[in-house]
Length: 114
Image (tube, rainbow, N blue to C red; front, side, top):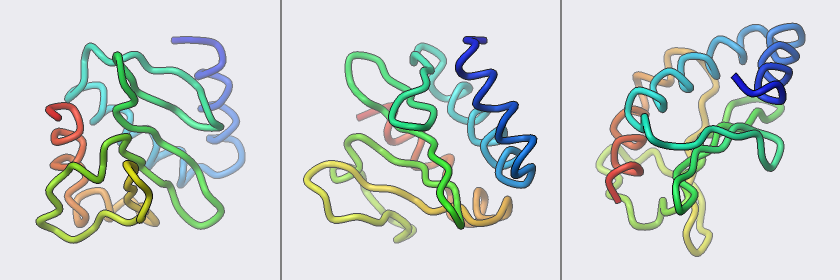
């Protein structure tokens, strides 16, 4: 694991363990779905990319945001994508249960296959 990534995760665990638990679960999910994606610290969070930005995990004051680089091209059958930007969309994860309830795995998979 990259040292910047390790420091980011260690710091998160020390300061807000509940958010660290959510980030850890989301990282595991992303890495299983996107095994060939590069995982880097960028823009203050963890970004997954190939030749394009796939998605990113960002800590916010009251939630974790999972952001999708081409979210505007994704189907949203569960009506959980937020944002009105030209390309990006995001899902707010406030609790660990939100990962399942907001069908995050579906959206990560869609992002990988765009």
